[in-house]
Image (cartoon, rainbow, N blue to C red; front, top):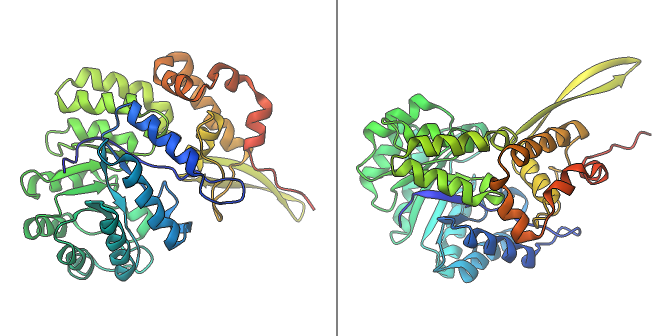
Amino acid sequence: MEFKGAWTALVTPFKKDGSVDWKGFEKNVDFQMKEGISGLLPMGTTGESPTVSHEEHNAINKKIFDYAAGRCEILAGCGSNSTEESIKSVKSAAESGIKAALIIDCYYNGPSSFELRTRHYSRIAEMFPDIEFVPYIIPGRTGCEMSAYDLALLGEKYSNINAVKEATGNIERMEIEGSILPEGFAILSGDDGITFEMMISPKIKACGVISVLTNIVPAAISRMCRAALAGRYGEAKEINKKLKPLFDVITVTSLRIEEIKGKQYKVTDKFRNPVPIKTLMNALGIPSGIVRAPLGSMTPAGVSTLRSALKSVWLLSPEILKPVQEFYGTDIGKVLTDDSMWEALAAVEEKK
């Protein structure tokens, strides 16, 4: 499998009752195909893998294979903080016909880099020699981190580990990876906002991105990746500049004022993926639905930040969002002026 270009970490659309919206799921995949995405990743963080049941998890991976196999590459999310659970997920994905799986560092447990390499990744790679594996390094979510050196050792030992989803945000670490990983080992960005920097760096030479924002703008990010891979850095830089307002709202930080015992206090809220992307998708008429608890709606201040970012891109670079308008039949200009719709997207706490 060729790990390069733009891949989408798919949102899982839910109905109001919390069940999977399979019709919406298929429509979103059709949109991705039409816009030329390189690959799809179901059941990552963006797909809300922590809150789906094991049965739903396996069904979603299988659905992607049944519906999209042959039209693009597929990387099944099979991560868990339990090695045994990851093994079960990989087994189910393999039985569905999937040939590649994403495995994350074991969150909460806090294993050392040595333990991650020898007791987690190595064990899984040995059990499934015909499946390609992509380690997912994201210490901000997991609280642990397999080192660049242990990643290189895995790559040297196992031919079925030849790519990494790099979401550490640590450029120095990535430069080390670029110098010690085996020839042909692909570094994929796990952070939309620094994908361009990673791809044009002569020391990192990232091959592409597993993206959150491609749920909305797959064509634009695909073009940016193709341009960077072809050495057309000026073209890639221009696209990156147009996308920046959206890159900046994958995570949204906002303030609210709360009164306690007669005094007012400022409280900071940090809304993380997939809350902002699902809110944007709902605004744009893209099947997305609710976010499962404990995640939920953003505050009015957070939603306002999203609206401003969307407005900026629409006014300055409308071609970025026009594919959404054409495919989903959304009047984006009208959406941006509809105060009531944006108010409905925000969480309003009932005061007792």
